[in-house]
Length: 182
Image (cartoon, rainbow, N blue to C red; front, side, top):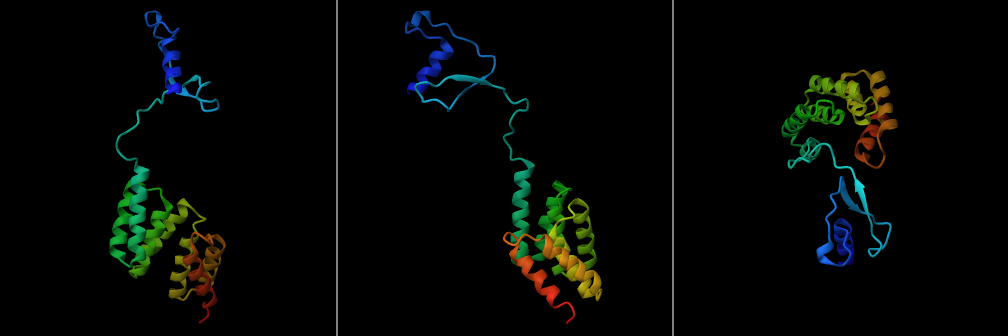
């Protein structure tokens, strides 16, 4: 309550007599500094944002929900629905490499390898270090009998996949590389 009184008095330049209070018009939005105790608080101006804050969610938040939905569908082996979720995401954010990689993974599991390769190639044009993309390309090359390319892609995947965040993909890549000649 003391901090509120200090702020109000600072804005009105109070001198404890109600008839002498003259309001000050701040040129910028006031902000309470936190480096002092509430009794010593002072007002410091801050710049008002030039763009108004939108009441609707940002495209990035919506994209995050679409991405998570697509991943959950992919993990639950609902591949067609996963393709649809990632396709919607790609329409909203056409430069999001992980969306192409994930849709490509869904196509891979649907055995639509050409569509998967197209998505993986697009993902790599956007982010060459996307390890999961190299994993799936390696698996496709292995399936096609191109073992030299498969080995190259799987080794890249192992080098690029994060061992904690993407443990499952790393294990698949290591297993596929170990079983390449079989």
